[in-house]
Length: 273
Image 1 (tube, rainbow, N blue to C red):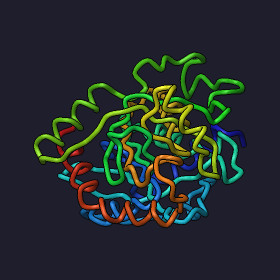
Image 2: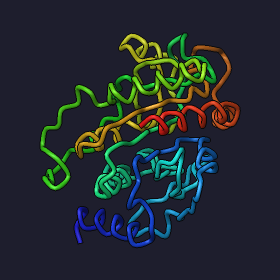
Image 3: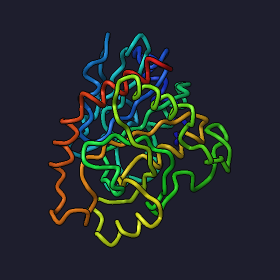
């Protein structure tokens, strides 16, 4: 059985278990943001380990479950946790969930992450709409033979993050009186945090925030014709911004602090789709 068959089998398994057949949007929750799935109406969850071929993350802050439910009358599919390249997975494994989302016929996805703030505007606790990204992971998920059933060989990435969905996020934030930022996300391999010299280089490149995910999923989503909205929760200042060392505990603590705002923003966006 090949990769396409594995993806299709997982999608059919989810359909057969009453999940995702009518989903309007999928949401991928980053580190410490898994609680955002708890407020869904008429919800039920499926552990990743139950889904055929689905990879499970072992990173702290990633629950490892798929939740089906409703937000504002909309059917949503929430991925509480993701796998990362730095865990030793290959790109096809990292983007497996996104391939399944595409095979389920879902045409919009919201990718969220915890990120380090590089720009002065992206301080701890800020929410940043991703306008574009810089992929410095050293790999592209589309390398290798192209399966036309997924998408074209050379997909355009000019609007990898949907202008319409970004405008919808702005509209929602204004209505809620919630300040949000816009910026460029730089994706790195990890798992070590960046050096101060690397952060200075990223700032010169035009990056506003840095993290270890999202870019592969966004590339694969656009390859499959899925519209993408990316939102970073700035959980810590990047290396060198302040003299203190970085800790994953700070990431988790900040995510908990902004959970209410984050959930309100997501619910407002979904209600306006």
